[in-house]
Amino acid sequence: MNIENYMLLMIMMKIYIYIDVSMYGTGAYLYQLIDGVEYSIQFVLVQQTNIEPGKEAYAIYYALMTLG
Image (cartoon, rainbow, N blue to C red; front, side, top):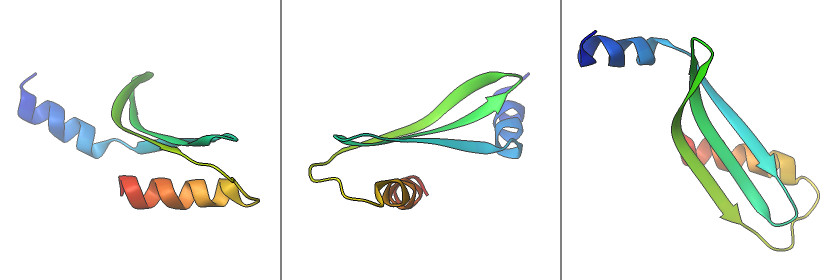
């Protein structure tokens, strides 16, 4: 398989995002799942203080704006 075909294959596959929120920050992991194997695309981590209610919604917003 040459590289051009491989990149086309990855472009045609779905992209997934995993988001995690804790008391200390927010993290997001963008990846593709190809044949049961996760291929990392990008990671985002933001340390935060004073996390307030609605932090999950903010985490989704922040991850999509940063990774998009």
